[in-house]
Amino acid sequence: MGRFIFDYTDSKGASTSRRVQPHHVVSLDQRLYLIAHDLDRADWRIFRIDRASNAQRTRQIFTPRPLPVEDPAEYVRSRFYEAWTVYEVTATVEAPAEDVQEKLGGWGEATPVNEKSCAVRIPTSDLDWATFALAGLHAPFTIHGPEEAITHAAGWGSRLTAAASS
Image (cartoon, rainbow, N blue to C red):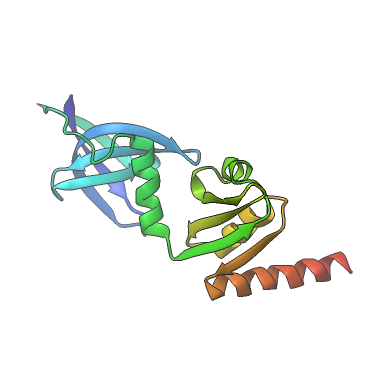
């Protein structure tokens, strides 16, 4: 496999030239990401492919190094969780854990409390998303924390109640 050089624009608009050993392309949330070992930073990096330009093969061959984890998609997902997690929203949902986990997918974790309820953990930077995800389960739930998540959901409740009574 050959090395690549490309220009990359990060989320803040800063452009850099990157020299990488590509490893894997992953599709996540309708975007494509390149997992590569960045030669200048001597570490693994994840690049959004739509932010890369002027890609060129260098013709320098390399032996692929193993990823730090087995599953490339899980690697991308876990790195995003680490980078984006500001809140660990916890709740109890009155529904079987298996059903809740299916609806949450990889964006939350449902652990059985008993046959009819589960504990949910949603790592997020967006309390709107966490509130929406819990409401979208179509089951009664109680948010336990953090306090910001409880206050945020109460605000949603007030706005939705006002909208329904107008």
